[in-house]
Image 1 (tube, helix red, strand yellow):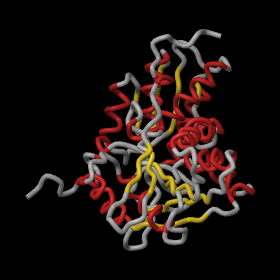
Image 2 (image 1 turned 90 degrees about the vertical axis):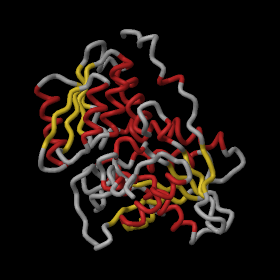
Image 3 (image 1 turned 180 degrees about the vertical axis):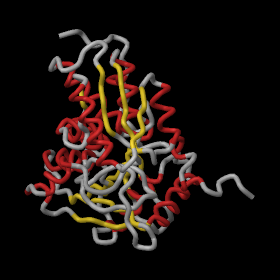
Length: 318
């Protein structure tokens, strides 16, 4: 096995902060993991590093190997950064609806971008076919168990160390691949917590659903990137297990997601709209739990990849 490059810094990154957030004096306290402080600006750095390092140790990748993934942006950005750290090549297949900021970030790390029309199922199919034909390593975020394992082994352990005396009563996350929710819930329950898993679901205010952003096994809106319909085998399989028997699904209207995202900006949190979604669902979950319940969610990514997104409409205008 080739040694991993000495100049890697990803495995030396300090744990991301876990902070209590109250949006108003009378609002419940939600513990929020600031995952946007990871190196590429999202929680996907965790799965990118873990998937590629395990593949390296298994001799599935090595210097110069081409890594391929289908992603609407955050995972591909994280994989591009990890590939740059490890001396790998990277090719991202992304939907043509993804913001241009994401493509630019992938390319800045030396990755290549190919846009695909037809939504995420077509993007996933195209990436898989290319990898098979070109002897490339396919990261397979939507089915790879190393995705959830990254959060189980690292993110959940960080939270438990940051709240050593707490029982984690609920964990809340939007569902892209489902790896965050599955991994955190698994880590907390294995640590002895009786933790309620909560899937946060964005929905258009008009009640309409679309499926052109990223993937999950539910139906979601077009305005909260990272969470949509029907692709994540990882999450679909987990939902059939005893671990997920208490899973609840809470819907947050798009307008509420945007409103909370703007409110978080005013509080100094430079987040994307998925953070507004997660906070909204966490606040909804708090209504059915004890006043002193410990509720964990994540702020998945930074605002910079959304400058051309709807969430920035009107910002800076008189």
